[in-house]
Length: 292
Image (cartoon, rainbow, N blue to C red; front, side, top):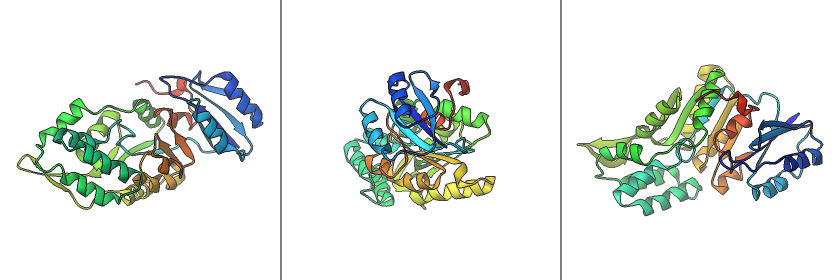
């Protein structure tokens, strides 16, 4: 059996009974189950219809995400998450660059790197070079004044951890930020690049080796092996080209508000929902979420 999940942005629910019932009927699905009234619903089908992506496209204009996946073993035992524009709403290096007065140039490089138009390592090195001479204290300033969390993150972590899942944050960003995000949200571990500092100023170089796409794949392999899990036990989430390796390897790879070139390569595409979408696609009802 396959689970078909319909979901929307919890801040602006757009899912009504007629839309959900119309799709369930057209696809010959089982009983409709509301996971959260107006926000998320699901039903089961024996096979995924061939017009899945045509229907998906039509629902996008209504602010509704559509996911179809095998129903068996949807509940995952590990969360592997990107940080920038995934667990938080910003790209940390862009925020640092904005403070340094080179924001537009760095944002342009970031966008191309996340779309896969530029080599990640080269793009990171070039962007960090533009931060040379910035006082180290700016890192804390950015954390305090500019970093905001993606809605639903605390519920996602608290619920999966309550049910025994392991949570790892793996970023092409920097440990100065992943440490803060991991501690605040409750990740068990975090991995990221380092910003080299001398005499209280950024040197303009990242520490080596640079953690990019392959480092995220390695993290998935290393952590699952250490915990005695399989790739199928993992739900991974990210938005950029450097996330594709882990998204494709995980049992459930979620492209969250992803660049179009990234989303096109993933079977689970969330453009409207927040991080609670990762709970809904695992079959959790809102009433099942842990208190946060």
